[in-house]
Image (cartoon, rainbow, N blue to C red; front, top):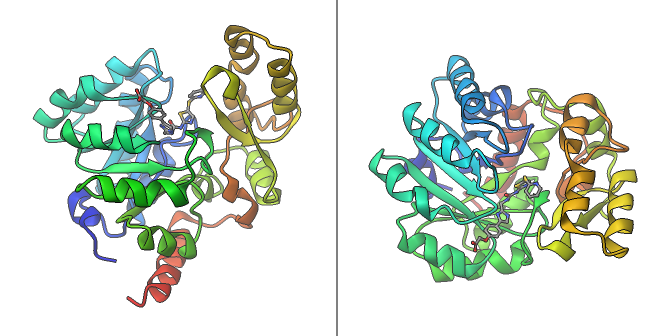
Amino acid sequence: MNTRIPQLLGIEYPIIQGGMAWVAEHHLAAAVSEAGGLGLIGGANAPGEVVREEIRKAKKLTNKPIGVNVMLLSPHADDVAKVIVEEGIKVVTTGAGNPEKYMEMWKAAGIKVIPVVASVALAKRMERYGADAVVAEGCESGGHIGEQTTMTLVPQVADAVSIPVIAAGGIGDGRGIAAAFMLGAEAVQIGTRFVVSKESIVHDNYKQRIIKAKDIDSAVTGRTHGHPVRSLRNQMTREYVRLEEEGKSFEELEYLTLGTLRKAVLEGDVINGTVMAGQIAGMISKEQTCKEMIEEMMEQAGKLLGR
Ligand code: TUI
């Protein structure tokens, strides 16, 4: 399983953590990196200075590399993009958009740039702009998603680009990792499983909701306005779907969800909050440390791949 990714990123295992809003803070990022993967601070909608503090706190917990995810729809994306350079971060992933305008600045600073893409077209464009790898993220993922499944997206992206491909969406154990490798990926990005790790600061109600989830428990809201988001079904998703069917505007729907991810992650309101999680939630059955998760997944994947 010695692909180009561990060497490129200076890590032990081909596992990177998703840049999940509110969830991917310094404790989780440091724990994943300490365990030999690549931990990431999720910039999400946070101001640059908040991200700077998170980076500094993570660096106090680990000397291993950590990355930052820039959520490109954020009003603070420009500031976060600069903070990353100032703080000497060496790996950046981006989500929910096209990071072209930052590529020159990041490359000049020696940063490895890994855009998350949901289509072959964007993967090819990112390669042309100097991306070091891409994350091909299927719609099994939690949060903001594209249309393609991981099964169909990963091999098509792997055929279309020469840079390494990292598979994401629906991967939560060694079987998923082995399958991703069979599809042409050289690493995986994992989100939902790390949400229930011991080091994750997510409210216990949120973790228990994932642990109890069944295969069919997630729903996608926001398709009508071009911002599909996958979360676990609850009062919030039902209300959203009802208003979407009534033809409410994007602004009205945005207002409904304002602050609801925070409410679920920090306050544990899993009824009226937004419980973003991927379809693999149905398979996740226990809380473990990040180290236990990574070692278990790597051992299982290694056996399946005969390595
Ligand atoms: O970004 C994610 N996942 C996210 S971001 C997020 S915060 C948010 N909350 C509500 C609404 C919107 C965002 C929660 N989860 N994953 C990476 C990802 N990127 N998935 C899909 C994409 C994507 C989609 C279209 C990337 C680029 C794109 O097109 C860009 C272009 O210009 O072609």
